[in-house]
Image (spheres, rainbow, N blue to C red):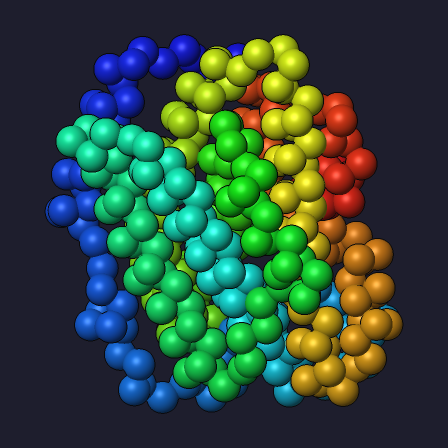
Length: 299
């Protein structure tokens, strides 16, 4: 199991993260040139990270259609990320509500909420700038999301935050380094990666503390909740309507993506580090096995 954390470690970590936030934070309204033209011919998403890459449907697409599909898929991922950022802020505020505002822990949580508001605006502006709809999750998942701040508590909450943030983080790290991707997408990814590193550190330590305080009776619920949220996150990344933008049938294309070994491997790869951590602390296991398998996060 991950190392045990002393109570004083929480305040020390929060103090370091507050200092880091003060020294290195971004304002997307200022630090991104939203008026810059999009680069002709560049991708919006690396082709091998597109959900249909390697399928018969992909083989039937022209070069222009493949670029267009990547454009709509990156918009879908960003708008799902925005949706979860809003949920994350609700979860953090729920934690803050009963906390001590003079503690560094609560002050950093409030600072993180400030980061997330900027990230949400940044994702929204990127989707608008590249000319795509803000797809978000499907209607059913969107409605279920309203229940998470009500039903969620304990380490599963911070663990769910980690799944969303670290899956997106790994995809964005690759895009940041890929000169074949649109500069706007790379800059948005870069800002998010740099600031999310602090959020990940904060959440990982909260997971370790939370698991340490669980009773044996609580563990199954925490495992189940985490697995279900993880499944809905990964299965919502690409909205079916994104496929219609390139003339594909949404139902057929969604089915092809779900059965695509390349796409499943992309999700597993994106989540391998966070899943290894969650397994180490004891949050991956029964009764969440079915949901974990459907999430594609487990190989």
